[in-house]
Image (tube, rainbow over all chains, first blue to last red; front, top):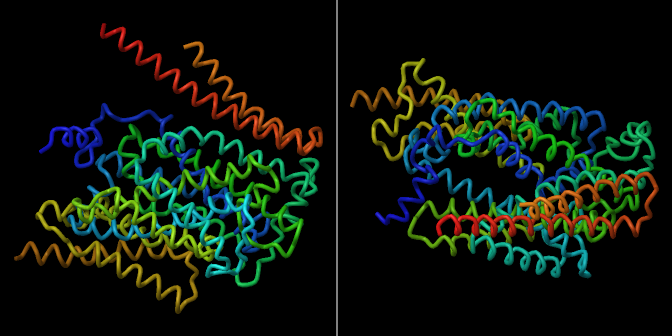
Length: 462
Length: 70
């Protein structure tokens, strides 16, 4: 083995436990969460709550409760497993289901990341569009409406993809530097909308919140959001990371389980303050022209904060899209390590850019975010069941590793059947995508245990 | 080290400026044009301050390690 390669693997602990003396202080997790969860996506989510006709009480209180549930999910579901094993999500999954399961998971993850990156490319393109005579897409647009906008999105996507393919470090460092500025800019954004919304004192906020910002009237074609929609969206918006166990990779460096509470910084700066401020920004646009219902962060931020607002949209979209395209490239590359990472990342960026030309992606971003978490959630349920329930039920955890199996079927069966179950609930019982995570999680746990019981007996007997 | 702290101070002052000017704009004390200029100024202070502080910090630490090796 190449000694340099061996050195890198040892440093990143990709296929071994993180040693206790290599754990990181709590402050690094607080910083990481606040920088990761104040991103370009917030500029879509806040306005889309208004589009979905949420009421002021529902958004202000529902977000508090949903975010608390998200924090508790990290603290009590993800982190205890992360610090017990101290493994990456991928190595953990490999021990449970074998190498081929990880490949399958990476393909799904890589493709989903292309969709999220696509939304971020369109956010960044909307910032550039402020300086160009291009027609903005309408709220109900699914397909591209303007050739010049398609060209702009593809150019921005190409630029972001090339930067992502050339390396991750510089962009990652810039994202870390930009994070505190983005937090302050989001707060400033909310504050600067107050005069336009007719709020001149704290006492006027509640009245205007109900009458001007979150009026409770949904736009045609968008389902009416209630308190429960907001609660479940804010809880499950990051389902892939907490219940889905995506953050095992990060929290394997945590010294104590209490570090899971660091997620408070991301949830309440990004998923509370930033969402509310972005919603207020959209309300200003509607107040100025009620027929202008499109959700295009660039022009919205420009009208309130000028050039600094455009920079906020551009940087928050770019610093989110870039690492996602990079990770997507890595996920696809894991299918065949001989593929060039540079080329695979360019292909992932190309796919994301192509997806980004469809404005329906941004206008329906809430559905996409919920679907993203839902698709990856069953693997988190499998990890939970494997960790807590296998031994008490007389079964063997990490079965693929113990029996040297390359493709242990129960996790994959549980994954596919759970998604099928959720689809049936959605199509035949009318359960919306935002609520499917909870029944889906219990179904995934039950199916994994059931099929493990059958397969482990069968394999042990043979 | 003092220079690094000074540059970090400039960066934090940029953030404070952004926050303060948005509050003043909301209160009606500052006009729209000045508000927009000061937002850009605060942004420039933040990025210039923090990037220069990092550069200066990494340069002085590499010089220190070089002296240590000598």
